[in-house]
Image (cartoon, rainbow, N blue to C red; front, side, top):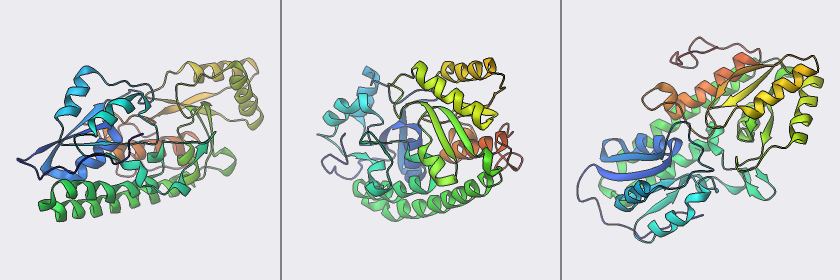
Length: 305
């Protein structure tokens, strides 16, 4: 993938200048740090799988007209690589996740797991880099970017502590998270959950019958009562798990829908990065028998279980 490639552009000719991002998690961080100085547009919307996303003609136009481009990286937007490479020849293009130290990354078959936003403490490491990149393009507002980055980092620190606290209320034997694909490895490592995904790190991989049966055996043996679906991944494989367990006399329910590769609806609390992770942490803790505050960390969740 492209990584922070691009010629250094001149200072903005006017405000707000145009920033284009890929996934909503990146857009949210950039928008928060940029404040009113930039108009930030995200290309990959609610419920859309970035692993499979291909840039449309309209996307290419937006990228071409942007002053600065940000994406996550670590092969998350794999099918957009060629477009990002071309755009980077003429303007700053930054992969924010590549600011995270390599020794903190999880790998599967020598491929880095790109779902780093699932560990709030790791995603917080991208914030200073965003502020620095914006300041390189717009030096006049460097102090404002740095101040907003500091405030956001403090907010993310509080969210991370909430996550550790609320997941710890789940009985130890029930701290098992089963989801549609392996998007929650960092989530499990950060908050103390055993994680199993039906598909691999990328949703391009298919789950076979052996994978399903292996997980059904695990669910029945461990007496797991809840599994989770994802907003950007079809439910069919999770439903196959539930049916397989039912045939063996074990009842499993869907503990809730989690946000994995996409945030909630734009304009809602769950449509922000903080709201997305608050929702995931609170939903998982409640469904697996933990104790959660009504409405989550801030009392803003639409339906905290």
